[in-house]
Length: 218
Ligand SMILES: *[C@@H]1O[C@H](CO)[C@@H](O)[C@H](O)[C@H]1NC(C)=O
Ligand SMILES: *[C@@H]1O[C@H](CO)[C@@H](O)[C@H](O)[C@H]1NC(C)=O
Ligand SMILES: *[C@@H]1O[C@H](CO)[C@@H](O)[C@H](O)[C@H]1NC(C)=O
Ligand SMILES: *[C@@H]1O[C@H](CO)[C@@H](O)[C@H](O)[C@H]1NC(C)=O
Image (cartoon, rainbow, N blue to C red):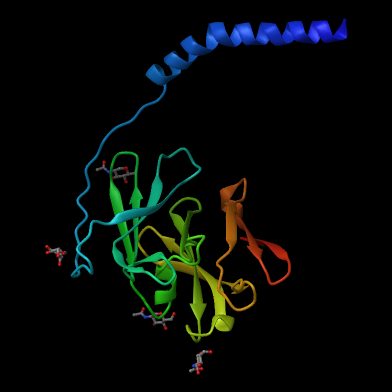
């Protein structure tokens, strides 16, 4: 009896879905998904390196229902046939796109702080050492790796900077040594999530030499 009644319940759910899902789905697409178009001309102040169009490398949106997104763009500099990875021009170009199509450009070009090692994808997993996260309000977290000797992976340290939309650096963070695998090869490895209340900061999950580390930043 028990099996029969649960089978019956299953049937009812399936029939319910067949009857209501298609129409419900159609209504949703027609009534609640809104989109609009805008055009933005990307102007280059400096001579470009390859003459290629900028690529979108990453998009992250704010969790505040404002419809605002941060986009990282870059032009390809060259293809590294040894590591089989693309390298991009050595500038951090962020574009804050607001719901009404306004675009705020943020350009950061200090190669002493964000060194060339951050502009190439790494390893066969095509890891990106330079990551961008929208935090809250007008704040953007950028994480990267800094080395005292770029030829020596043991000197690699993970860092972060918080930018505002005017391109000001609000704070600088030092997360600790970069992950090396199997002990000498640099293998960027981090996972960052906003706190449920973004204003309370973010959590960073990273691989260390023989363990994983969770850290909270406020
Ligand atoms: C970028 O490269 C293209 C192709 O080489 C060239 O036509 C264009 O003028 C360059 N842009 C700038 C700003 O130098
Ligand atoms: C777009 O929205 C932002 C934020 O609400 C505002 O600051 C900006 O002036 C608006 N831009 C235009 C062109 O309406
Ligand atoms: C670039 O970054 C380095 C290291 O953080 C700093 O010492 C230097 O003043 C910066 N240069 C400029 C032009 O901001
Ligand atoms: C940087 O690291 C390389 C490789 O380990 C080493 O040969 C070189 O001497 C180092 N340079 C400095 C300035 O320490």
